[in-house]
Picture 1 (tube, rainbow, N blue to C red):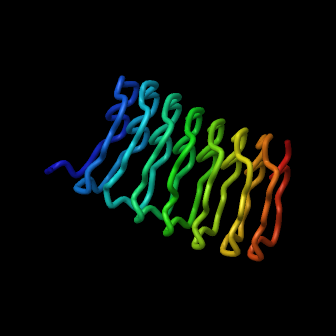
Picture 2 (cartoon, rainbow, N blue to C red):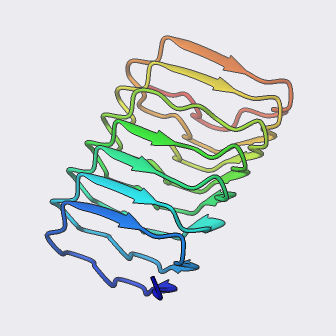
Length: 173
């Protein structure tokens, strides 16, 4: 258990099917597991505060991700194109979801947001076609453009009191 860092693109494009990242890891680099088309589950136990850009980009078979409670930010494109992703546990500490973070996660049907969440970036959940309901907490002040664009099965929507502006095409079908 001496591993403390996984560098950028360290496992990009490999045939890994399951990963468990131990608590000793302090840094997970950009694109660390991008293009791992056989990856099905990822459990991140590390004490990370952010999931960097493209960490799991285009992992087409990824269905489930478990993140640590310490994550406060999911950066741009972190899970972009993970079209089989059905389940992700978002930490109660999460404050920001970056641009295109879950864009094209077509199987994602349920997301529970933290009461500390402030920002949902542009296209963050764009084309999440299976998403049925969204409950945006009062803590959210910024909803990005096209944030929930193309969520074709969306039938329930609650927008908290903190949102002061709904930008262009935020919920456009």
